[in-house]
Structures are given as structure tokens and as C-alpha cells.
Length: 162
Image (cartoon, rainbow, N blue to C red; front, side, top):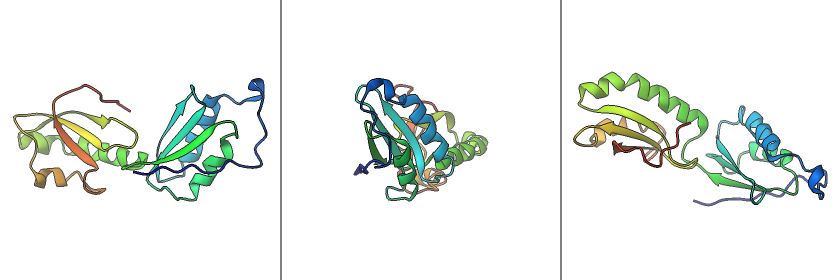
């Protein structure tokens, strides 16, 4: 997967002194506000150690990306990284998982928990069963494309719930 850095808004105020800098938390809030109308938005990550902002998106060259550029000051590094699923797609998958719980139990699969491990990764669905679901069953969840959903046997390590 590639990543892209866009030039910052040349109209942004020069915040060369530390006291003039807008807190990264405020920048994050602005990005989350813009993301409400961006269907490709997946997540934003802030790294305070190097003043960087990473926007994960399913649309690397979308027009919304320039809206993000406008709210990130010149002193912060802005990077765009590709994501498999947008926030809206993850929400849709959670709804599908909720609706398929009984069907999966009838097939012998108890879905125990689900979420993403990384902002750019697939939805991981953990099952408590002797084996993983076959391809026909897995395909019912891959409505956004192959490898956007992974099934794994019950393990809770490294899972970040959203």
C-alpha cells in the first residue's frame, strides 16, 4: 500500500513559535468533523512525538483530502494512507455481524468479538469453534471485497475495539 503527503495550505498561519501552535487534539477534532461528510474516511492517527497527522482513507485521491489539508497547520506533517474499509463500511459490517449471529450459531460458529487491529486493516471476526467458517460462509461477510473480513479462532491479543 502506498501513502501520499500533500502540501499544506499555503494560507495557513505560520506557527513557528510553540505557544502559537494549535493543539493536535484540536486538529484531530477538526479532521473528525470533516470526516462526517467524507465516505472514504477510515481513521485519523495523531503522533505527538513528531507532530504528525495521518488520515486513513479508502479514497487516496478524493477531493475531501484537500479539506483535511486546510485544517492541518504547516508545522504538522500530514500523511494519507490507504485503508481497506472506511468508517462507514466498518459500521455496516458491524450491523451485518449483529444480524447474522443466530445464523452463524446454527452453523456451529459462535462469534465472540470483532473489530480492527489497525486503521488500515480488515475487520477481524473471532469465532469460538473447532474450525473456521468455509469460503461460502465467509463470502456472506465480504460485501466490500475480498480480504476485507478475516475470520480467526478465539484469541483476544492485539485487537483494538472501536
